[in-house]
Length: 265
Image (cartoon, rainbow, N blue to C red; front, top):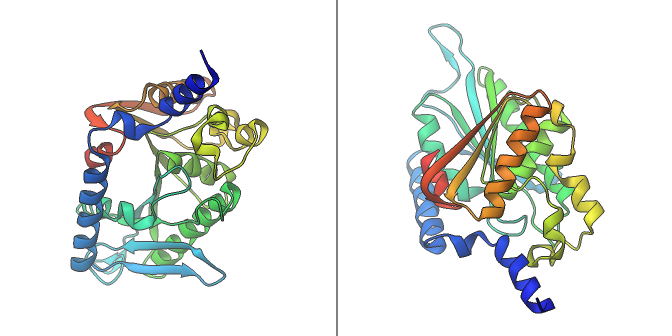
């Protein structure tokens, strides 16, 4: 195989848009749903005063605090990290997810971070951790925080794993959707152009090679129309978590691709 053909094959394997039905329409529909929800149910817009890229929208269930019937009733929190291969989208891309959690009496935080090439992945991890801390602080000020679930989609799943493993903020459960957990295959793909990392750096950032025992119970979701490489990554990561003694559930969702899988959570 010629070098150009090999490069094209590597790029294709990790190009979710090539396996999806209509990426632009899906993202536009999700963004519109998020804007509609935000106009109807205004979130708190929280920004770190020292780092404007560490920001989030925090949606609170109806009511002025987490106290009910004269006693503390802390809100469970779902915090979610968007994908985009560390170089696209922003936190508002996942605002639309808030509606389903609000309906269950949960608070929802869409976490933001800076993008490559201006921001390193290590800094993104720290920014997401700060966003999660700000969400918890805001809930504590309003009555308390219950169970904390941290979710992530695609590259956001890698960030979520690292935030949970670093242990600066309590995470009770992970929801990992169509994620990439071994980053080393990306070194020779188009994804690495704005990142500029070598294989050792990618390995160091990979949840697959981190301390799996440090991760909380995890739900690993893969989509039927995810690229085969992503499906393999999800299955392999779930198996590795189980082998490390972790609590893990692998969920294979049919009829959806890498992008509209979020509609089925």
